[in-house]
Length: 365
Image (tube, rainbow, N blue to C red):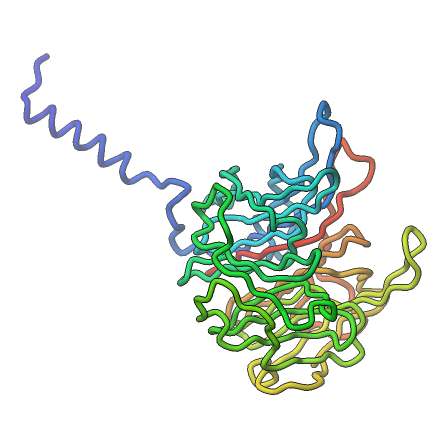
């Protein structure tokens, strides 16, 4: 049978149209709610001949009402034990720092994120000599800049410009150093408007607020002092911080430690502050609206926390390395209450459950 040229062209066009209409994992979902929790694990296999340990786990349905860990996607990034993990939808990348279980990793791992499933894929990593002990990270979508704390030998905040495509060793776009670095034990970062928020532990633990720092383009800013300091009453070891600007809420992790090494014991708690925009307008001591603490919570050494930013959302998530668990609580929780859900990750090639040290939540409607 012969076909006319017009018929052939029409058939080709139809085939192209069908393939063009198929969704790819890079396309945004339609009317799909997303609640993906990325967990970083510090475990590392030093034997080069043995199978590596998974150091990232994705819980693709973290707000599932029955079991947030019913479905998981484990992954191996190229760091020697996971440390801080961070994702922002606009970056389309996971940034994953190393806890440096063996030799020093002076790079940051990058993972692309599939929009439909959240599945991860290794991307060219960012090499730089300042990447030795990275803690908190935050991405500014409009400026296309990644801010992170490097805590040793002295705490500094460094900035990488256009980090998604960065794959060679370049000088940081900005270096921010502090007036009294010896008095700082920083842990986490957040950006609200043009202000940088930094959680810190130790004496006068809480949050330092650096006003209009994000709008600065100076390559080096030294001797920085906070415009305001929020000191948390009776805090011991402030670590993770999550600021929910949609529901006007702050969450901080804190714990009390007794002893050291293998004999150490911990009592953990989550500090929740409502109406945070008003609280952050002045310096001084702040008192939590609610405190999640007690034996029923199972909290020992919480070091990272994520609030679900969606309007009227229900949950917060906590990483606790001493408990080797990720906990989910209701944001309305108060006092000695059991977690709403618990997730622990057991790898077949490891004798014990893995140790979570950082989490990042992608929650969107």
